[in-house]
Length: 468
Image (cartoon, rainbow, N blue to C red; front, side):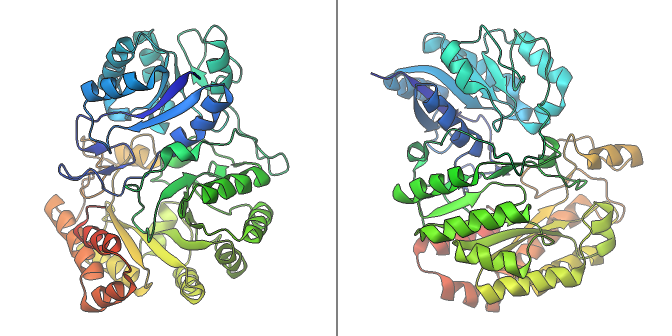
C-alpha cells in the first residue's frame, strides 16, 4: 500500500478560523473553504510518491484525541499542518504530541506571512522545536517534494524551508518571470471535495481554490499579504488550464482564484483566458483584482472564460484617504468599473474599510453611502485594524494611534485610537452599514428574486448579520 501523508487543518482551541475570520461557537460552517497552501502542497506530496490525505479538523469539529484516532486509521507516515501566527507555540505543542502518538512521524508546518517577517521568532521556534522537520515559508517555490523523497538530511537551495539544520532563514528572491513560466506539481483537488465548503458569494457547489499567480507589486499601507513577494510570479498557463479541466471533470462547480491581483499582467492574462474559454467548461469562477486592472476588454474576456464574480478593494469614499494608504484610484473610475460589471452580468463585491484613525462619523457614513451607490452585489464592511508587520503598523506606532491589543481578524472591532470616534461608535457604525445594505426593502427584494436555493437564502441572512 502506498504510504500516505496527512495535510491538516488542525483543531482550534478558540473561535479563530485560520482562513482569516471569526466563526460562531455553534457554527462550524462560517463560509469555510479549503486552504490554498494545502491544495498546492498536495501536488508536492503526490509527486514525492506519497498518497495525500486531508483532514479539516475545524470543519469536522474534531478534538486532538478524535483527530489521532482518525489519522491512525489512515496509516499516516507524515504530516503537513497549518498553524496560526498568534497561537503557534500552543499548536506546535499539540502537534508534537499528535505526531508522537502516530509514531514520531515527520511534521512540516506552513508558516504564515506574519511569522515569515519575524525572523527572530522564526529562529526561536526552530531552536525550541528540534522535533519539527521544517517550516514551509513559501509554497510557490518550495522544495517539499525533494525533502519528502530524501528526508531532512540535506536542504535543497533556495532555503524555502527553515529547519534545525539550516544555517540561514531567507525568502527566495522571486523575479518577474512572465516569459519563464513557473512549473508546479498538479494539486490533488479530489481530496478537498466537500459540499460543506462555500464562498460568501457562492451560488452552487462543490467549490475549490486555484492559484495562478503569486505576489503583489503594490504597497497598500494596510496590507500584509503583499509582504511575501514584491514581484510577480506566474504559473505555466497550460498547466493551470489543465488543472481547471481536471477540477471540472471532478465535478467542482465553482473556483476561487486566490491570486492577490488576478490578471495583473495583461499578455499572460489574455493567453490564459483565451485558452480557458476555448475549453467550454461547466466550471464558473470568481477572483480578486484591482479597479485599475479591470478594463472593459479584460472584463469581457473574463466573462467569456467563466468568471461570474469579482472582488474589488474600494476601501474608502475619499480619494485623499486612498492616496494616503497608497491606493491611487479616482472615484469616477470605480463607478465606471462597477457599471461595466453590471453590463456584463458579473457579480461584484466591494471591500470597504470603516473608521480610519482620523475619520469622523460623517466620513464613515459617506463611505457607506458611496459603497451603496456603486450597486455591488455584496459589500464586505471591515473595521480598520492595524495588522502586525504592515507599513500601517509602523505609522500607527510612530504617530501614537495604535492600541496595544491584538488585531481583530474578523474586522468587526478596531485596535486603533480614533481621534473622533469611540470603540462603541465604530462597532455601531459597522452594524448600521450592514443593515443599510442588506436589510433595505429594495435589496431584500432583489436578493430574494436571485435566490435559487435554501443555501443561498441562509447565506444572505448570515451576510446581513455579519457572521460571514
